[in-house]
Image (cartoon, rainbow, N blue to C red):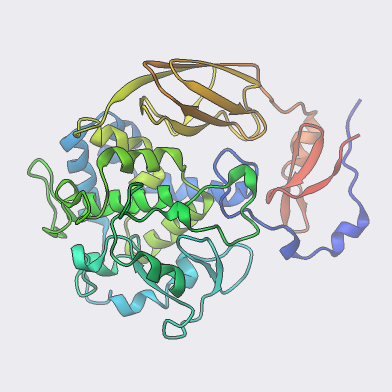
Amino acid sequence: MMKRILISIALCALSWGAWAVDMQAHMGSREAQETYSQYLGKQAAYYTDTYAPEALRALSGDDLFGALNTLMGNTCRIAETRYSYDNLRNQYKYVDKDLNTNAYIIGYYDGSSINGSWDSGKTWNREHTWPQSKGADKSLPMGYDMQSVRPASTAVNSERGNTPYGESSNYYDPNVISINNALYVQTNLGSYRGDAARVILYDYIVYGQAGGHKNSLYNGNAQLLSKLGKSGVFESIPVLLKWHMNDPVSLTEMVRNDGAANYQGNRNPFIDYPELAIQMLKNASGVTTYSVTTTGATLWPAYTLTLKAGFIAYLGTPDNRPTEVTITGATGKYDPETGRLTITNVTGAVTITAVGTEALEQTEAEQKAIKTIYNGQVIIIRNGKAYTTLGATLGDLR
């Protein structure tokens, strides 16, 4: 018998604000799927031909660095005279926009929602993830790169100074900053560890040099391997990769990656394809990698290697996830509701075997209903309930 959607008439009175987006929502969540779909389209349009994802994944080490370095050099417009440090402050409202509140931006480190109007730094200012004193001087392109220089609460920003990132004493760890945003729900709660690691990796491949590869944006102070330790920008490569893999890319990062690319032309490939980071640095000192194989489900990011520290990834798609997962070679925890897979305590080659799916059970009429517009939003039917594209429950199915 055909199911039908029961939606209360009262729902029509709800405003757009009622459909709040979890700003830390990941690819594995159903929340904000429309935004995520737009992101995928822009991502696909950027990585083509010799820079297609399958071509990049076939590279490693200096060869991968060289490909990414060339791509950045060919697509980044920041060397043009119209770009500057001052221009950033008026662009964050488009790049770091809060999807829930017009004219507000999301602050770095604490995820706070801040009025995007510039007030001369009283409320928020510009944080150099790679500090000015260590190579990202604001008079140089690296010092006004939208992908790297982020808006942050002035109070939160001052706590970091130019201290390198890390977990040991005398290093700065974003985990000490509480997430100051009610829309960061516990299921998807991350930190800014991964965000910071991905920006440092980005600066290295855009402005650094490896294996003789460098582009016209080269900055001799952007050499990652020579900027490790307490006088550098990161504690170590193993810690950098650990942060990158244990704090997955969020919807917030995806949205700003699109915005930054609109502004200056280039993207951060470690947001788009997180697996490339470990592929590029797998032979660095102190890094121990193990192989990963999957059966029965797609793994995102498409990790083929992992570290002792493990990783967080997602299995399947938002509407087609495995119901059970077995893991060997590591400790694993799987949440079938979100598809979130957490791998820790890696002891050897990791195998991930997924069985069953939570596929949609729909009649032809219900499949058409997915494309129905309700109050400006697409309705998604899943597991006996109807949702908007922003994750709000509309009503039970009967």
